[in-house]
Amino acid sequence: MEKTLASSTPAPIEAVPLRRPGRWIAAAVVLILFGLFVYGAATNEAYRWDTYARYLFDTRVWAGVWKTIQLTVLAMAIAIVLGVLLAVMRLSPNPVLKVSSWTYLWVFRGTPVYVQLVFWGLFPSIYKQLDLGIPFVHQFVHIELQGISAAFLFAVIGLALNEAAYMSEIVRAGINSVNEGQTEASIALGMTWGQTMRRTVLPQAMRVIIPPTGNELIGMLKTTSLVAAVPYTLDLYGRVGDISGANFQPIPLLMVAATWYLAITSVLMVGQYYLERYFSKGASRKLTARQLRKLASAQGKPVVVDDTVDGSPEGQGRELK
Image 1 (cartoon, rainbow, N blue to C red):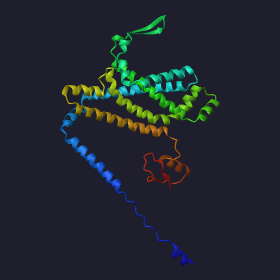
Image 2 (cartoon, rainbow, N blue to C red; image 1 turned 180 degrees about the vertical axis):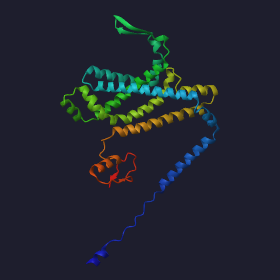
Image 3 (cartoon, rainbow, N blue to C red; image 1 turned 90 degrees about the vertical axis):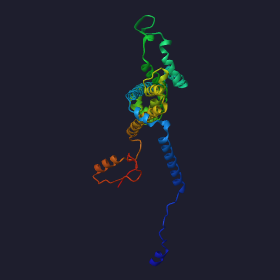
């Protein structure tokens, strides 16, 4: 009987990986094309790499980079606060607030940002003066707008008001992603509608809100190049344009601007990655390496983390052995 079983046992299969020559050919073609592009750019005199190196860390370019960062941060901060307010207004049961929010979105999403910035540049010409106080009774503050030279302020306001319309839709989508049972539970605990939004819904909606907000922040960084419509020319693109207008070498100066935009974008992408990882805690049932170690420590068991499952830096998909 044992001989019969031994004779009937099939021989082990020698598995041979499937060869995929198409992948290697495609990779080789891409590398060759990339190498040709780099070689062509390095040997092309039109790029003027000496001029590029001279102005990459120029003090005027540094000042423009700092102004661009200020424009981005200030405009985005105002846009986020106003976007949350508009989203809450649109979801409010109050019809006046809902219609007002929808009208704001209709206007600012329906007109180009460049046109809006031009209008903000002409704001002192449209409104000669600004009075703050009780209408038709008494004005506490009287401001002559024609005497104000605040291109930076108008640039921030123009960018922020336009971006707030898009942030409103992002926040609204995040709020709608939260299960209705969370709202019902909060109301059952005696919370008002505002407390439910602030304490229950918005914290859970951040997991959905953060990724598109990071994209909007990067988009805002690049949109700052349009503030010349205000006009404001002390940003990075404006500074580079002034320098190229003096030395008549626009190509290397554009490369300088592109390099700094890429550098700032890279930093923002890293920050976005860590924010997404922070707010996505608890969204997945897969435990990270740190969570596995704490679990094993609590149970008094030795832990060995297998990093070969997916190789992700978050440790998701790792196994406890």
